[in-house]
Each structure stands twice: as structure tokens, then as C-alpha cells.
Length: 49
Image (cartoon, rainbow, N blue to C red; front, side, top):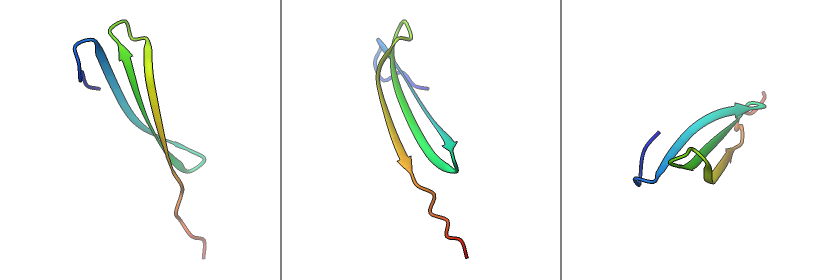
């Protein structure tokens, strides 16, 4: 969690969904209302042998 500007708070976290990594980045105002959100998806690169 960080405060890039006085009127915003940003939250970054990672989670796993069906063995695939999802990064989420939320920007909230000072009332903790969502202003913007960004997501990135990283596929599972494991190969079965």
C-alpha cells in the first residue's frame, strides 16, 4: 500500500487463480472509493513430462 498523491491510495497484490498468477493494482480516493484498477495475468509455464 502506498500514497502516491495526497488524495489517492494505491494497493498492489498478487493472487493465484487456477494455478495462474494474477497481479492486481487498485487506486482509491481518500474515502477508499475505487478510482482505477489494473490487472495482469501470468500463465502457468509448467510443462508436464
